[in-house]
Image 1 (spheres, rainbow, N blue to C red):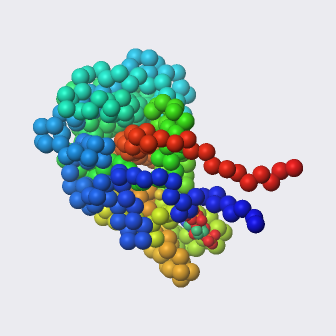
Image 2 (spheres, rainbow, N blue to C red):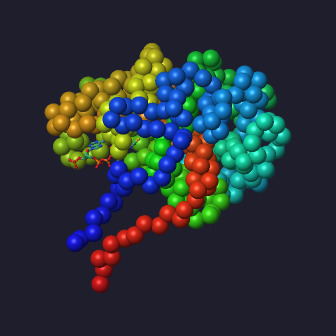
Image 3 (cartoon, helix red, strand yellow):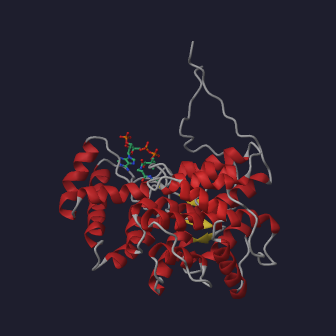
Length: 367
Ligand code: COA
């Protein structure tokens, strides 16, 4: 009997996790049992700590973790020199992939005393990645590194550094939400790639570097940048209907639409769409936002007429929020990585409690 091949591993269960649960049939996402709709009302450091450790921090602990992560969100002199040597048009995701395996994981500041030792190197690596995005943005867009004031929170420092100006309360709330929504998503391609690397006994940094590479692809995290590029190409909501019908007739994938697991609207997109509308209204991004809405409407018409369950995913409206926060599209996926890295670390930790080399078989069809 011919062996069955499952090239995309659809529906294949390769392990257990307590971290996040994607219920694609009902459009629900939870981190350790807590729905994302409730989690976005909390602070990013509290939610990442909940995801990683399963403990809720009190106010004082949350502020301490926030400040420590912000303080660690710097590069060493050597790491900064590495970035300075790179061609300025290097994509931020390639910069992160170059930096992750060589990043110094020794904390520069004392971590909070209650933080379990096992979390420290991973959190430092996550902070270095956040620093690298800010510093690479500065080097490639401004030509120099903007001196961020001391005493900021973790996400505040990232946004302040990118814009060269203090974010207001609404901007801080928005980045808190986008980063919480991107923390974890079960065994997606980036997380799974990192688990494969972890299964060989390779270092945490090697796993994160592999996950970063997978995340950069346009069928995964890179769809955020691609969706906004598509909306720019379409140009206006009036052009969307014919553009989308033409694209679909020619088997072109609409970026930010569709998902391997969700057969309903991605619950992250449901949160981001009204936010994107609110943030873009009356700004230079309003037309782009209206174009995305028009693309989604036509996709719904075409897909539902064919009986296909394809809806907007996380990437579709996230870019409009990011643009309104001053983040250029080239940096979207790296901002995604700034959050997802905490999820990866949680998965590699979970995996290493019961490791097993991941090594599937191929059907040999050669001579
Ligand atoms: N645009 C147009 N058609 C799409 C589509 C999209 N975004 N997503 C899925 N489809 C169609 C496929 O062409 C295919 O049609 P067919 O049966 O006529 O060949 C069918 O729906 C199944 O798609 P497939 O790509 O096999 O499903 P999948 O489970 O592999 O899809 C994605 C998951 C994410 C790869 C896919 O939806 C996609 O490429 N989306 C765009 C990229 C994206 O937004 N990625 C981010 C995901 S969070």
